[in-house]
Image (cartoon, rainbow, N blue to C red; front, side, top):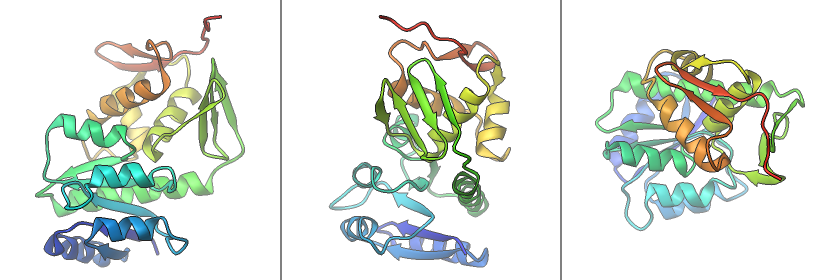
Length: 231
């Protein structure tokens, strides 16, 4: 049974989310204090498959908490927040979040996002084959789930890693936004615009001048097959 940690200072919303998950036989634990959540997540007792994380909390915001735990946990993090501006979503992705859902949320949408990320995380953990992809000065190791640029580790969220892997596996091929969304997100439910948000985050972390991920205007993106590196 999958296990989800719910971190939200709103007890009513936490209980509602827990009930939604329970109906789908997904186990959950609620922590209403972000400081307590930080202690638990960084402890040896932490063994969960996904975190649902509120942003606006006292003492420690969800974005601050995400930043503190991202290096120590490699599971999906979904922000659940009343902040709906695109800039807030971009910040969430850039600091290591895998998805974002706005309050008040649709119960079905929340459940679909959770299930999608749980499936993705399971595939990542079960289907690694020791494959290494190397293009330019970027190296992606599927077995260790690590990415390096110029021999320096690059920290990516689960979704960013899967997006980069898909692009690099299909290097030289122009991929539509719809193709990318279906392949990486595994469901047509959601906003295909999230592809652009995650592409931007990848570029910020990997590139100096967009030399790897090319935009095909009006269509999608292409990861270059051959890169000429500066001496």
